[in-house]
Image 1 (cartoon, rainbow, N blue to C red):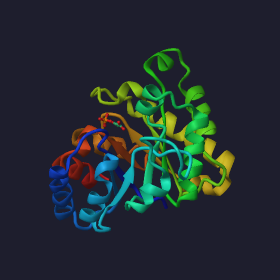
Image 2 (image 1 turned 180 degrees about the horizontal axis):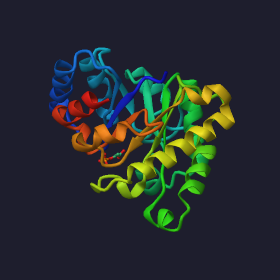
Image 3 (image 1 turned 180 degrees about the vertical axis):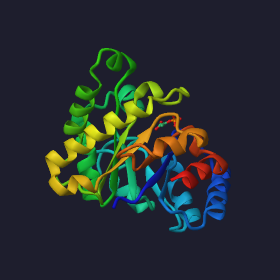
Image 4 (image 1 turned 90 degrees about the vertical axis):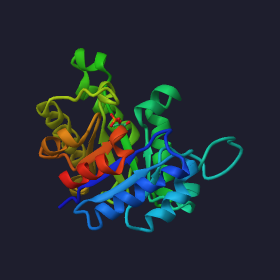
Length: 244
Ligand code: PEP
C-alpha cells in the first residue's frame, strides 16, 4: 500500500516571516493521514526544518550533481540533507526550461540525491504543443526512462506528472487524461523495476487546489500531489492535505 504524499513547492517565494504558515499548517493538521512535504527556497530550508521539527518533511527544489566543488551558487544534495532536507524536487519544468536541464542532467542529480539519502521527486510532463501533437505518452516515457536512475525504489524515488501547460495556469487535464498518464507511468515503472515499481509514488501536479483535490486524488494511480501556488498558505494546503 502506497502512503499518499502531499508535496508543496514554494518555488522562489518565502521569507522567514512566512514560516508562521508552516506552524499554522502543523497546528491545524497535527495527525495527517498522508505524508506532508514542503520544499522552500534553499535560504529557508534550515529554518523551516526547525519549525517543522519532524512533524512534516522538508525538501530542496534542486541540487547539483556533484557532492562539492567549484560550482558558484549551486547547492549539493549533501548540503540539502545537512540543512534538514529529506527530499529534493528534480527536473521541474521550470528548471528544464529556464536552466536547460536535460534528462541526462536530471538523472545525474537523482543519482546524487540517492547518494545523499534524499528521496528524489522527479518531474515529467508534456508541453501543450506536445499534447496537441498526440505525443504526450512518448514524451513522458522518454523523460521517465532518461531521468530515473537504476536502483529507484519506493523509498528513494517519487515521480510527479506535471503537464507544463497546467502549471500555474488554473487549467487541469481531464480526470481521464490524468488516469491515462498515471497508468502508463505505473506500467513503465513495473516493466523496469518489477514489483518495486508498484511502490514508487506517483504525484499529479498542475493547478491543484482545494476545489479540485478530491476528484484528482480519486484517480487511478494518483498517490498525491505536487502543489505550487496553493502550498503557500496553510489554509489552502491544509485543505488539500485533508482531501488525501
Ligand atoms: C508546480 O510548479 O509544481 C505546480 C504544480 O504549480 P501550481 O500548483 O501553481 O500549478
